[in-house]
Image 1: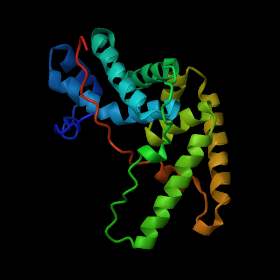
Image 2: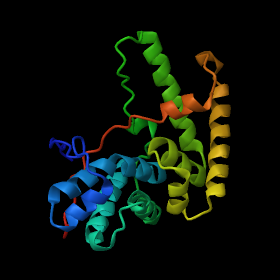
Image 3: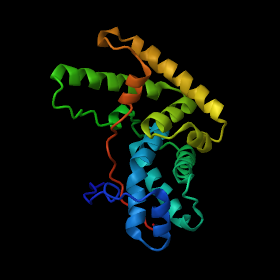
Length: 223
């Protein structure tokens, strides 16, 4: 797939999801592009976490927004657009059959581990990269239900109520799954004392950041 060199419309578009959806309904293609670029990386991370297949994850991004484009007239953007998009992506991901011969990828392989810190020493940057690799590796080893809530909460920024809507379960269940997942992640980090870093919640959260952008093109009706 050729790199997408177009400017990211979401970068300078301060309109809310509500405003973008209603503008897109009126035929504003830039508004729909902005929604796509606003959420594409998060949906890619989600698709990759479930399928472990980067190509499948890119297809899930395009399929999710193709469905969103068809559903523009009935979308309710005030509070539920983001969880709606992620729920569609989850369903598409779980319904996708594994392809024969595909080499499974980890979240770490799809993440950008180049830390932009001019003041950091090479040893500090290397330490942070190693910690990130360990955290993402531990996320990959979680069961599907626990990996999903971690990706949604820490990597995509959804709150507990939104996650409950995406996974169709009570907020209390989401909290329980996150608590279990964090315990597993802390245990994983504690097994690597050479890092000299306490496996606290903020550190775990900080390492679940900065994924590599994807290059899927904006989907249009009829594709």
